[in-house]
Image (cartoon, rainbow, N blue to C red; front, side):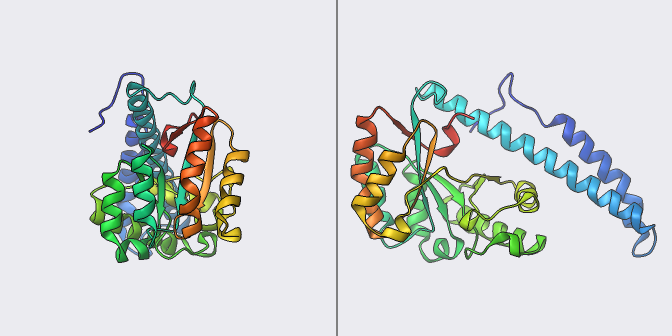
Length: 265
C-alpha cells in the first residue's frame, strides 16, 4: 500500500475548506425547500462543489506522485528514461487474453481503459489484467459522448464502471479516458469529483480505422517520441497482432514501455 511521503502534496488545507463549506450549507439544508434565498443556496452549492473538487485534485496528484516515486524506486524514471505508454481502449474483448500473454512474455505493462459493459461480460479477463501488473482505467459504462450528458448521467457512467472494475479486480481506477476524447471543463470537474483524472493520448494509431497490423505497427513506431501515449484498441485482432512488433521496435529505439501513471508530467 502506498503511504504519504515527505514533500508530497497534501489535501489538508482543501479538506478544511470543504468542512467549512459543508458547515456553512447546513442551515440551508435544515431549512428545507424555500427556507433560504435561492442565490444563497446556489452559492453554497458552488462552494461545496469547488471544495470537493479541490480535495480530489490534491488526492489524485498525491497518488500520482506516489506512483512515480515507487516507479523510480523500481528503476523507472521517465524524467530521464525515454518512456512510452501503450494504452488499449474499449475492452476487455475476445483477444485481450492473447494480448495479456504477449505482454507477459515480453515483460511489458500497459494501461487498459475498460468499458463497463465489457467488464460485466468478462470479469475474469479484468482480474487477469490486474494480476499481470497492468493499470486499469475507466472508459465509461457504454461509451457515450460525455459532453452530451448532464452531470448526473456523467457521474452514473463513471461510478457504475468504477464499481464493476473494483468488483472484478479489487482495484479502483484513478484515470478516465472519455470516449472519442470528448471532454470539456464540466465533464472534467464531474470526473475529478468522482475520483478520476482525465487522460487522453498524443499518438493515435488509427487501428480502429485501418484494421491492419502492419500499418498499426508503423504508425505506433514512427510516431513515437519520449512521453508518447499510444492509443490502440484491444477489441481488434489486428491490433493484438501488431503489439509484439511494436514492442520490439520501440525497445530497439531505446524506449522504456510504462503505464501512463509513470510518464513525466
